[in-house]
Length: 146
Image 1 (tube, rainbow, N blue to C red):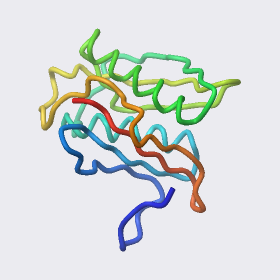
Image 2 (image 1 turned 90 degrees about the horizontal axis):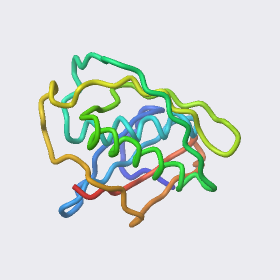
Image 3 (image 1 turned 180 degrees about the horizontal axis):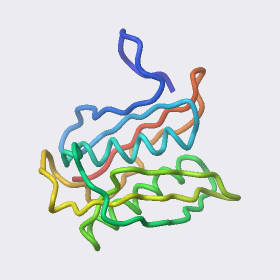
């Protein structure tokens, strides 16, 4: 998957992309795990200002899936679930490969303590979902209902 734009981009990062009535995030990094962690960060920074956010707890979660696309969806489903049920968002995400998936370590902040800058995601969609290796590492793109 190629990243659009003329200027060279950092080796790892994320950005929100204009999308009608939804949230679309693109992320990239040298490794799959870093790319997926960037996707989590991109989703969270699209609706909350994480500047100066203080983690209040750590949550570990194992995500299992048959494909990289499914891993991205499962990981972001967990983020949406934690937001809905616990009012928390990850301000830092560490991912480690495990057989059949990923071990995620989320450093969580209380969402209510952070400035809101956009609509919160409600669900991950499969429309336009991409996740895979690129010549420079890994890239992914995902759309979420808000």
